Image 1 (cartoon, rainbow, N blue to C red):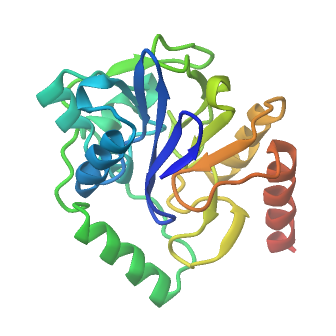
Image 2: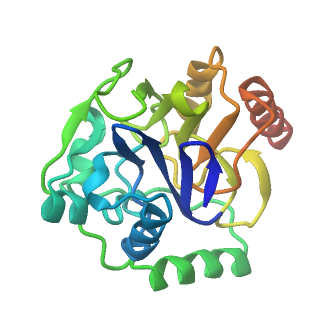
Length: 241
C-alpha cells in the first residue's frame, strides 16, 4: 500500500512493515512476519522495483513479529540487517524474553495470534548476522534514516526518523491498536519490558516534525507528534487513577 510519495506499507493494522523508496534504492523498516514475503515482493513490483533494489533492513527492535523476512533478505540477497546494539542478541535469538501480557480480551487476542500463526509467526528465522546501530546515527541507506533510542519496550528499541518521506517509524515504542485488547488510539504497546522507561522515552520524540507517525501495530497517526505524546500520557494518567 502506498501511503505517500516514496512511502509504502505492507501487512495491516495487526502487524505492519514499511518501505522507503528513493532513486538510490529501498530501505525496509521492520520485516513483519515471514509470510509477508509475498506482500513485500508484490509491493516492490507495484513500485517498479524488485528485491535487488533493497539496500537494507532496519529493525526497530528484536522481537519476532518484526524479524519476519529479514534473514531471508540477508541470506538469499545479501541485504544487511540493522538493529540497535542493545537488541542485537535478542534479534539473533541468543536471549529469551518473557514479557508480561497484561490486559487481554479473548476475541482480539485470538485474532492476533491467528493472524500471526497464519502468516509465518511460528517459523521466524532469526538473522544470523546483524549490523549494530546506535542512538543518533544517520544510516547510509536510502532515505538517510536517523536512529532515535527508545529503550523500554526492549533495551534496544528505537524509532527511525526519515525526513525524506516526512515519516517517523516508532515500532513498538507505542501503538495505535492494542493487539491483545483491540482498543484503538494512541497508547503504550503490550509486551513491554519496562513500561515506565518506555513512557519516559516518548520525550525523545518531542522535537520531531513528521506528518506520518507509523507504528508496528495499528493505523498511521496523522495529528502530529506532540498530540501523540499527549494522548498517550493522558491515557496513562487516567488509567492510574
